[in-house]
Length: 613
Image (tube, rainbow, N blue to C red):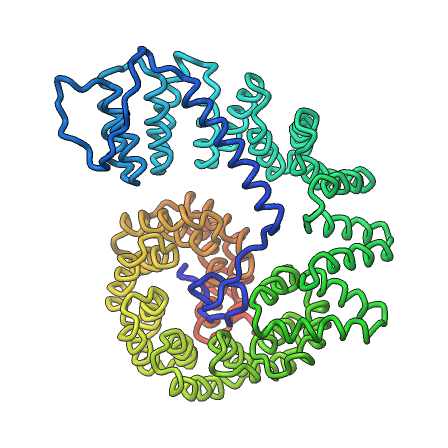
């Protein structure tokens, strides 16, 4: 099916960049990540240098002095040997011209086709250019002749990791370590793969080997602590994190992990001491300030909480990282109670902060306290980066109150202030669409397209409105435009395919479009229903039933999908099943015309009068 009646949802603080003008990056450990990257880079550079200078090319030649000019001299084909082309490739590589470097390495290999070193260099160039299939083929070719080539095995692991073939990557890294157990960075690669796949047994094995061989590996001890936490072995975790701090005393992340352990053990006094330790080392640390402030709030130490959080609120006006951290700690994980408690104090330090009011509105919205959320959204000023988001929240608040006209009036008022904002026009058009004022909806959406001609969601919305208005051909052409702008747009692919199927035309094309949509959204119940409906229209009723049963399992409460399944069962003369799904569909239908149509189907099967409402 094309999807249920479309209602746009309000933007929240952490959506993708098509929804919000303020993207907050995922949290990554600040100091620890820098340390890990440094460790891997240093180890990797050393390994690369060893691989480069420790490997002899297949024939001994005098050293070639690197030309001073960055422009390669004319090629003299007869005189040029493999090392000439290799040196030229390195010059081009240094200039950033990887394509030319690849070309010259290829010529070097033509001159010396048995050189594993040259082939490895070319595989690495392929990898840098994300030509993963070529890189892997080259690597596999080398390993057939030289299966114990550690550098090539390492590259094979990296290629497979980039291709998300994690088992193959693990196998390659395991082989590297079995041949050369002194590669510290490979333990980090391999351990992280096991850890992220939640294979804590193997992750523990790898990190244990790492810290045994490299006792100064703070990263190894840190991840051992993380593994013990997952296994609920908090005593071992505490020891591992303390060892991490012994090796790298300035790190914040092990301290935060220790705080969580102390909380789990009920040792709140130790947690507070650790918060204070963090703040002594870094007085402006926002995470520790928030957490300690919230702890004081919960334990009734209101003045202490206020002293910390009021100051934090003042600082948030000039330091955007404070709000980023707040969102990562409280809004992303939906800890709305804690968010509200902290924000109330922060607002005392910055009562006119639009950002804080916006965050408070989001938190109250998460608690379903809509009036309080609306109050704070209205406090967001026009010059705020969150103003557009707040506008949409306010409009949807009116919508949820059943006052769609108030939402439209409000957006029209905002439109005067933001005349060139296409997203405001998108939401305004969707509200006109819901009122079935299709002419107004189309006019507004087209105005948005004039402002932003490649705005995919505006084009998609226009196609939907045309369809609801009965202008099928206009809808079809508009959906084709969406697909031309965004070939992987599963919604548009599905919408166009279902439209063809519903019209009973272009059924092969409909099937192709919908299968393409399923590539991008394989577990989408509505797209699955569309494919079932194509099979129904083609007369493949058993295949239709199979697909529609899956659609119902994914979306069990959609009346159209249920009706489709009833229709398919009727075609194979299973009247009992058809009646079962028709009745389920009737209970969920909302429009009078739709109810009447399904009642007629039920009546034709039962021979009785109309089904009651």
